[in-house]
Length: 133
Image (cartoon, rainbow, N blue to C red; front, top):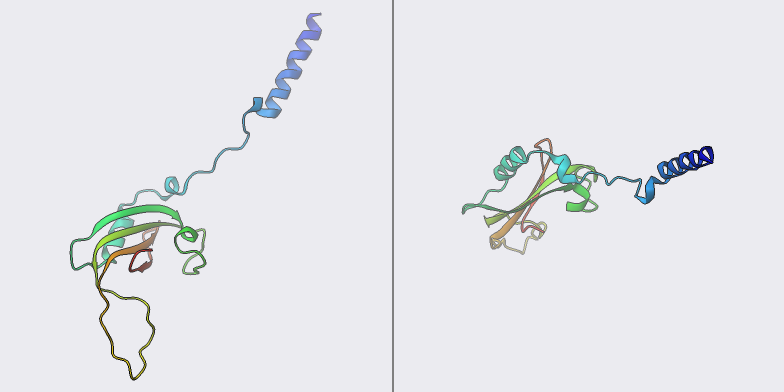
């Protein structure tokens, strides 16, 4: 009788090992922010590329894949890990509008109050835009 019980126990342990005792055998992949490392260098590069006529403040900073910051863009690979910074301040740079026709006159844009700067995890400037989106 003891031999039969020992065999059943071995079989039970073997089945438990195969099934993981009901727990999931998959492990979650690390979040992008745990892979980005220290933001100090990226923040310094972002500040350098966020010229504001008033002191800028960091509204948010996120480490993510580039595809989550600017879907469809080919500036860098969509899988590139980047720091995305949103600054508050007074940013006089205007984007959009295209070239002027000869009959048009340039009108200054109202300053934007937010700017997004994207820096890769190696500290390279990737892109920026006002207002932050």
